[in-house]
Length: 363
Image (cartoon, rainbow, N blue to C red; front, top):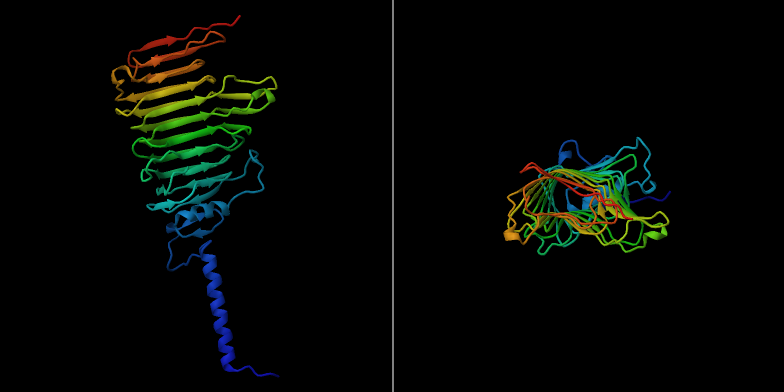
């Protein structure tokens, strides 16, 4: 039998130790083993798979990807399937260098921490049935910011599980960027529907809430592209140029093959707009097929129409509108349309006055 010298044995042990250290270091870059004696789990990013990461901006996406459901078909989620969760430690400023993609059936809890982008990109982009809550998104450190703090631009259609954005503070500076962006602009079929927003504060953006329907795909081919049935409640919009804007490039609402092409049937309840001399409008409908909107208890606090150069509530051609407001009562531009039914109800809570639109039938 060949003898192995003591030196050879020691060298082998030393090599094994080095290998173990290198493997452990590699594992730490992805996930983290928690010590019972020296670590506090609340200081780490953690997810519902039971894994932990160091509290860095890039590890937020790593924790989300670790609980992703690649086998789930877009928009189809069986009843009873639980949300996966990713939770951040509290009181930390996370710096991120790219958009956080929150995948289907994932809830991101910011834990009271703050996310700050290093450049001009969307901060959080939500997929179908995803959620984000409990924290701050601060884009004020990016000069000339023109992207969005919260963005929806995929096919989002409520089925059994809901999208939820709640208890967030969105902060910008110098009226830059978009607080909440609902975007349909591609030539693919896009439906953004059934998203709930509650208890969100939006401060110093150019657009507080911006619905953008700029797709030019012909709906007559059976193509569906619409944004409807989304619900906003208890929203505070502060020092923002355009508090709520709806834009639609469309000139028609439906195609002969059953296609849809519209921004319609969205609901707003208890919206507080704290106006400054930078505020240009409270609600602005810009485009043709924007219809069926319900605005209940809209408060324009401190509105000043700047000698008539701005309009608090500006609605273009097609209405189907309900508006109950306080503030800006002398600055309401109502639609004029004489081809199809055009009912609207506008209640000025300051003066207890009611305005009803005419019902005109095309013949």
